[in-house]
Image (cartoon, rainbow, N blue to C red):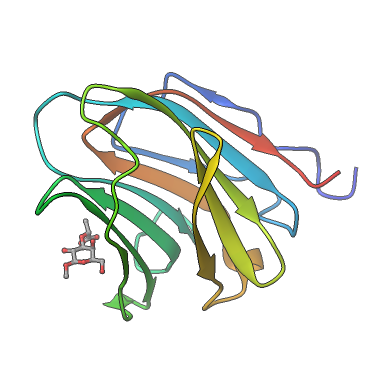
Length: 151
Ligand code: 9QG
């Protein structure tokens, strides 16, 4: 297979978690995260689609915050510096509740689905083919992270 096959699912990964995405991301790729927000212990969690284990280059930082009514910050970090935040003043997650969070890679943007509904889109600021790792931090527990390469 051209890219050596899909990255295997990560089952019950312990947070904070960082894992490689074998072959990197391609147009049409989907990443599905099944988990639950913890009832307490903090106000934020984040999913980072990044380059390597190091967190200095994060193409997509998706960061729900249970603060000020609840909102989600999306941003990119390049060589250690954050860019301009895109904030979505809506919170699709609930403390103590399970969720399915899906990132779909498209040619010009990521599409983020929460529990089957389109939540937001995020235009690529760096080429998505640089992404070869995923990290998840904060007030969540995870059942699985799975990868569906483009058909
Ligand atoms: O606050 O905002 C996103 O724009 C920063 C946060 C930072 C990001 C960033 O401190 O938090 O959410 O990697 C980090 O430092 C994360 C955890 C202006």
